[in-house]
Image (cartoon, rainbow, N blue to C red):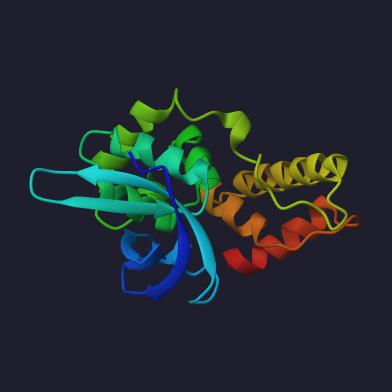
Length: 203
């Protein structure tokens, strides 16, 4: 098991990156969303990995953090979802957004991922509803400018209230969460500010 790869990012290809470790180039499959967050070629990177072994091939799948890797492992444990399908889901939804979609039974949001149909999305929800904790949904939200823990808790509460208000207006729970998380926050942000900002991404 290769837990992570640390080395120099030497190339970005269509669906994978190449990381040089001691003169050996490792090809690591990643989602486009994750690849877009990597530093420039030539930079040092640490990528958390999952080694997929088949009879005729060995492939590395990479993630920016351990949380995404953990969720990926849960996804490929669902019947009908392979590594590429799991990567496709995480390209469509962040780990927190996926947790929210599972808890709220948002089939539409999950089936929007490439290769994931309605039946597979339903099966995913059934199999993962007891493995993904609702308490973790907003755990990784962006902290306020001063980085204080109290401010982070307050921000999470405001975002949760805004999501609840948007779902009451008829928006899907996952799309509401995604829109709310796009709104920049500071110490003066109110729920009303979040709602106004989020609606710009929903209209």
